[in-house]
Length: 235
Ligand code: BJW
Image (cartoon, rainbow, N blue to C red):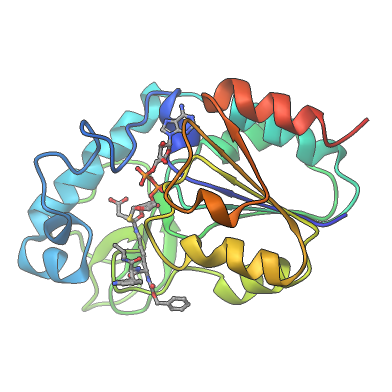
């Protein structure tokens, strides 16, 4: 059986990473256009770099929770293909899977990029980046390049879309965890999975605006709802 799981900010909320659209969410105090668009970065690179520097530092203070660990445990025992697509730019899935190595057939894709990577504005080269990034951070990859966060901003193309669409076209089960479904193309994945004939399940604190598109809904905090649901999938 082929499985695709999509995760959003809700899976990391109980680890202490704020979600985007909660009233105390990450964008509080910042207009989205100022910090999450290429135009915002061009207008004020110092503001944008400071925003991501603070979030990068915060990663040192958080840990994977029971929902990340339950997915890693499932990946270690899942017999078919298992694509875990996260919209999250934190590294909590990566850390959970490093502790519990997955079976063959498992893949993790960060479709909106990663806080712990930087990208050269001229060559597009991507490199690990754990510290702060300066507003005028020179790129080691190109004499006229700067380093920017390896984050997919509004208006930019999400990563690995061909790979994701291929997996959705062949999946038997699609599970969407902790995402509001407000941002495309991820919000459209449930339609692609339905077209493939997959069973579709939403796990969230509460039904989302698109809950009717799913065959089933499991509602509660991710640290409880995710392990309980995943336990039903394997003997
Ligand atoms: C819990 C919980 C707990 C809480 N347990 N659950 C008009 C129509 C259609 C599309 C567009 C349009 N105008 C523009 C567009 C396109 C645009 C878009 O979607 N805009 C919308 C605003 C309409 N999209 C893009 O520009 C994308 N690119 C694109 O489309 O390129 C074209 C293309 C497509 C396909 C192929 C090729 C090309 C790029 C989108 C990039 C998004 N990037 C961001 C920000 C990055 C910067 C940063 O990190 O600061 O990524 S947006 C932000 O939202 C972030 C997230 O990954 C993303 C999704 O948010 P998420 O994860 O759903 O979080 P929340 O906060 O919304 O929801 C949390 C959920 O958790 C809630 O439901 C809670 O209930 C739940 N929850 N605690 C369980 N304990």
